[in-house]
Length: 352
Image 1 (cartoon, rainbow, N blue to C red):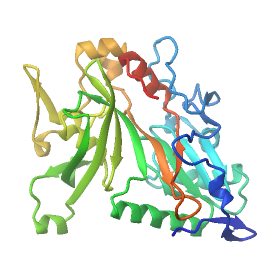
Image 2 (tube, rainbow, N blue to C red):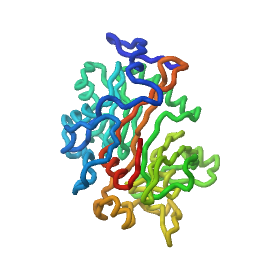
Image 3 (cartoon, one colour):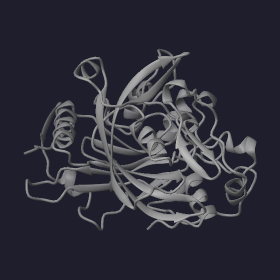
Image 4 (cartoon, rainbow, N blue to C red):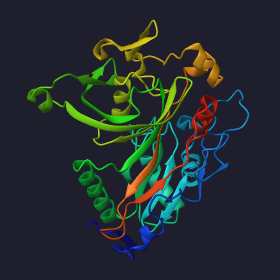
């Protein structure tokens, strides 16, 4: 059983309404508002849960992208404050923009580096936020923060226990270049990290030995479900059941359906006479994703614009434990980024 705690005068106390503030079950929606991201759009509000078709196509197909290098610390705090999905007790949930790293080198502008200022901005006083759950730099979507160390610890134990029990706690939305051969299923692969030419690459390992496992090779597992297809692409829900860097990108490349905007793993998928096949990961260097002319036309992109296409991988849904042991999980949702919704519109993919 997971006991949920909330702050009270220098400590934490049990507070069921921290969870009760979020409705449970399949009818749950995202919190009041979420912000668009980017220097132009960061003050604009996007209605919660919105995945409506975007407006007229223009010369800025990726509006809403965050460029941390163009922001001051104060501006980034403003962006993150506007991105807060909900705040109940010690828990803060925000909709992280694509392109914002969670951690980084000393001096770099990251989510972690501005948490003290964000905590002050949200009125938490001396109770500084810490990261409970977040995805990588190139991924957009939900981030769970807590200002109570005990709550953070218990939630992290919940996520760890769920992972060991193969119970998914997150659901990602993704757009793939290509359509999976089956409408749903599991993807299993042994993966390892290789550092080559200054880049960390995720490489699949066939039939790993016990020595391989001891040296860092990990057996990984993901579940996928195709939600919609069109124009040779698919809208897919992904649930990682293990944790490994770039696991979902590597898994979908192995299915010959790399994620749209994956400029690292897509080069491993080649096409000859309309047939796709995998190139050896060890000898295939990362390069900008190349899309065929028909897809570029549907997306209303030039080749140079496609080279800047952001990764279409969004942490859309996060499950938290219910207030009581037999309660269903609480489901938090984050709206899709504007560029993601634009892509769905261009491809005729519909997501409810």
